[in-house]
Image (cartoon, rainbow, N blue to C red; front, side, top):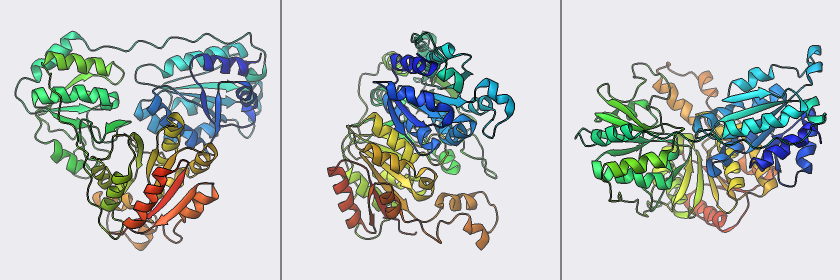
Length: 516
């Protein structure tokens, strides 16, 4: 047995069975070991940012890590943008990054780089293996680190020779650390606080936005009169008919400040204090009013359902909150405005679907329109680094092959990780991509005005426009093996969505968004 074989026996024994990979020469013994494993599924991604984004989607749906395999420092660097999103989503992930053999580093070969410096940027835990036998021990430690709290990114650097040199055997799995628990004193203090008659918001994030946790939070809100608020970009939100409804904090800082201005106190539940996404002239960075007192019920890495259940008992919450009714907005005939697109999606969204939202400029209208759709899980762009939508949908579909995934996808950000379409076709995942083509980085046109950056010149606008030429998404999708259609009105979109819901496999619907 060599170091690579020992590593993958260790990872499989620790519960990992899926590897999103983009390997190179220094990882060939690792590739061979995966090929010899009966239980590790390799999935080729044509860009490392697809691998990291897919591992994020996989972890959000299963609450356990997938594995990524990338090539040296440059390969890991290609994965960084979606590792940033995964870090903000607080998901478990294990990365294996190849490196040169230590004795080869002195020659400064073309692909020599500071691999440790690269992985440190987005890993909560990392280390380089020190020997072939140590490679499997590092793998066990990485799984333990990744499954700490809500989840962490853990990275093992695997020097090439330690993969091919002999090892004695696999390392035993290590237990995941126990989650922290909210103290009885905190529960008692917050129960008193919620009864003081002040205007209160319960701000939910992370695992507080899962279905069972929302029921408990809804009971607390029902008993105390608190507003039930949700973070702007949730990792995974249970929503739709039959679910407890949240008020989502707006993205635009000015709107969020107005939205939160009546609150005297907030209780944070597995979430940080809401702040503006960017700095803007004459706009505060903090969104809550200055007078607002901030308290925490439970941290991101603590036992969220337990804390909510105990607080519900402490405030005497016995009545369920009203649930979202199944109600769909009317579908207008004619051009595809964002609201019309949302109405069509809501009507044809299958029950128990997974919706991955990177609609960007169209996102708010689509979100509002689908509030009363069939029950579904909603996955957002947690870290704001665009290019997550297609890989996120792909990873979610790998994790949940029995559920249909709908990717609400802006055209500009889709170009960052268009390679995900190829992986969808190869793996025959049941993903419907609703590609919103407005031939523009439209959100940046909005931000240009909000930042008071001055009157744009024609040259300025060329940096925010996707015309000349407009990407042909039907051709791009078909070229990667994904069936595709273009629609220009609500009748065509309804027809395409109905067909997509009735058939398995990947498909792309290019929606020509009406210019406002």
